[in-house]
Image (cartoon, rainbow, N blue to C red):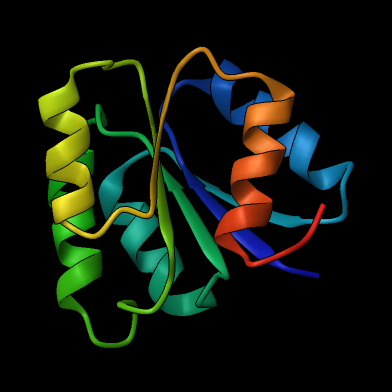
Length: 123
């Protein structure tokens, strides 16, 4: 069962993602800020990280940079899930190593399709 770490400070978004992924057989872990997310990533070595950019403390940008600078975490795919539809932010996220960039609100289909693609799974 693949493990997905969700780093998201909005409890409603976090619940939406957790419920929909759990129903499809994924193990989910959650963190509400970048520091806790990085600690869980190091401890659990998840198969995928879903990362919000607007977080308290170390924001998603700093968290993404740290994930990509750490040799132990470098291979974990990261999908950005954010409210920002600014194209420059999407470009920056991809340059920093994000695999995908989803703009909230997201549908269940978008979520599941993106997670499966990031994990190399077939529909």
